[in-house]
Image 1 (cartoon, one colour):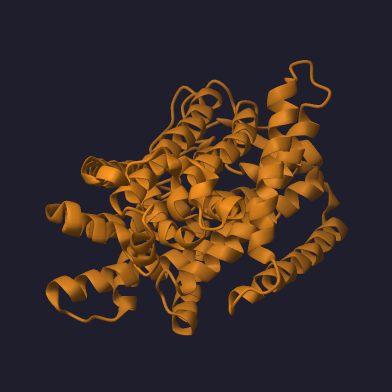
Image 2: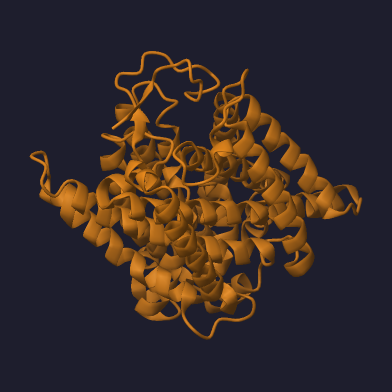
Length: 465
């Protein structure tokens, strides 16, 4: 999820509409995502697989729906890569320029971070996850400390009105727009699900990882947003006006309340971008691998490295797409958060929300006639999750958006049309593959998970359902 990245970029974006109700907006977003997370958890308990959403939709709605879910999912996540490629480079460029007065091209930093991501993802998913968790721990502790200091020094900035719609600049509708940015901050919570074939006891550990990350990071969001609201005194009109013009409010907060933290806050922002970049790479390549293994994409994507047992062809392909897309998009819109990152994030978010909705429907269908069906977990929760996603989806594709965001619905529509063509081509040439999509899941129990993962064909830890 990149929680530090989310609060650094999404708090300023949500501020004009939510005002002092930022904590409320992120609390509502947490509740919505808990319902969506329930869908992942329920499926992960019975279908641990590298395909995650792709496998879930296939099992619940059939091979055709599974193909489109995988098509949208890998397209959305693949598109997010170039945005992070440019954003982490832009942050690093600004930091080096401001700290060391060296003005280096952004793409130099982009290639350095890309090389690190490539090396880690090919050699070991275990090392990648360990590095991500280390960075995450440091980042979260720094921002929790900053929020705590801000709350302690806030004085009359501390108020429970931060959890009232009346504190929002636009009232209830203002909170609703803030919820959009809150939901965007949770995208990626499902990343653990794609490691279902590489985990010990995946039917137990993957649900714990998914549910635990939503709760822990959600609490972090609400607390840090309250710290920002109180510390910046967003309940004061003048302070709110200053906040809405501030591109880096957390840095401002550190400079004001804890100057000794300012450099660390800057570095944690860069680390947060890099850790999100690395996590995105590991998530996307496993979906590409799963679809290549089952024939939805070229079979070469399903190959594994003879030594490291990682899906190395999928990694190389994704890296090439990320670099080409990142360089071209950075030249077009600029590499920073208000350029390529924001645009690819908007397009990718539409795709991810569509995937969430499809899988909510698949959950209802999958457990429809099963004796272990639970009315709340398997029917009511996915319905509530879907209802909570409709407004964010509409707000992203609604007419009247500024350029280039007005292109988002057309890009998504064109991609779906290409997907329809690919589907009918596959149905005509290899209809048996559609029926088999999403059929490979991990065996239970898994007694040993090698560092390279479950992609080693010699490890009989997967089976076809």
